Length: 471
Ligand code: FAD
Ligand code: NAI
Image (cartoon, rainbow, N blue to C red; front, side):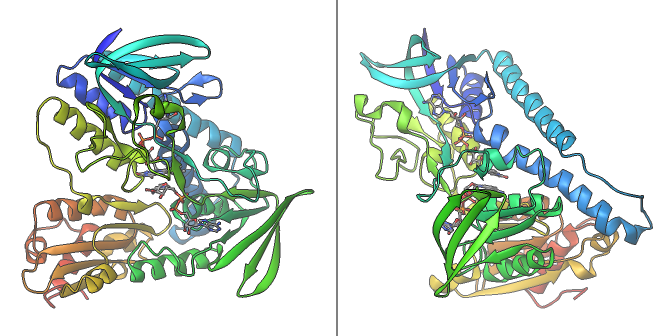
């Protein structure tokens, strides 16, 4: 078979690239090797063991936490509330199946050839790339003018103990538990650790998170990290920063030895989750056969346009530099497909939004206060709280604030940082504003619906000019 484009990987980077390429009239195939159980399942990490299942479990566990803790405030109560973890998992699995078949449907609709198995480079054949797809020993050769590598990432492993997804879990294992562990230890207080820790804490586990860095969530704005930390501790999560993990023994339960401020400790748990970052999944590509350049950490080396060192070979998503986020992967997919068809789209790393789906949620776009200070940029800031917002009070969720950072001289918005209810949704307004190079005054002069959470963003914009109305 011969195509204009073969996409290797069917995650949010790869499948979106395939759809856009097909929309632009290119004959396209997408090869994916992800196995869910013993069946191939499109959607990559994001759909099968990442974004979507984690958000499904976050919602189920949040509903349970509300039923057991906060509905009483609304005058709603029931005797003996229970959670059926197996049903919760079935719901999550149904969402994955529905979305995975949705991608297959989109492939058919766009006349994309869907192939299953592991793809690797064979050689350059005239003006074309030759790729082999291995589906459980059944091998076929494909030719294409362009290759888009979208092979994603896999969990980084801890040297002390191997993941078996029985007692020692990675994201896939922690998303598939069918009973609530009594004691759950998580190594790594990053995004996965905090989200999965929140899920199992709400469902009744005692959760301890051990983190090597001294600072909690250093990538977020400091004021935001502090607010999140305070609230997670209030919910009963135990988070220990600045610890060094020692031996880990898996015998009669798991024992984690660690050093905290020079003192040796041991922690016993039923389940251990390892969430210490992810590494690019580029080993299976047979890169050396064609001289594809990969850096020492396994990332495919690309330029600002996602071009590799090889002619007509592109790479996107988690397997290249930049944040490991699904929307970043998808956007790169669109952009590469458009570049292949001769267009010149733009991509701005500075306006990629970040969201952490804890309670309260955290979201940001652009620069933090520290980044602006380090760069010597003078800025003003406006902060407004959810506490005085009528919609937030009605929701029963009024923790947190919105902070806008704007250039001291030009008033252009440089960063927006949010912690509070549904900020995963509110951040889009800030992204649009920054993409359109808006000033804080632009946001302040836009009418926001009442009562809505977005009024807090409006108030933060007003606060940049010391004219907040409700603060
Ligand atoms: P992937 O989604 O990893 O897809 C790559 C695909 O390629 C996989 O199916 C893989 O099996 C396949 N593949 C690899 N090599 C080959 C080969 N040689 N041949 C054939 N197929 C191959 N991001 C967010 O933006 N928001 C979130 O809320 C979020 N939550 C997350 C929660 C968890 C628990 C995890 C683990 C991640 C989360 N992420 C989230 C990150 C997000 O999942 C990734 O950034 C995203 O999936 C990257 O997309 P991708 O297409 O680059 O790679
Ligand atoms: P991460 O990079 O967010 O966090 C890993 C944490 O583990 C870091 O704080 C790190 O200091 C710590 N760590 C590393 N080695 C350690 C050790 N030996 N002992 C103790 N702590 C150690 O990575 P994480 O949480 O695994 O997630 C991977 C990626 O997936 C994220 O970077 C993010 O891009 C993506 N993701 C995004 C989500 C979202 O957008 N809501 C949700 C979940 C994941």
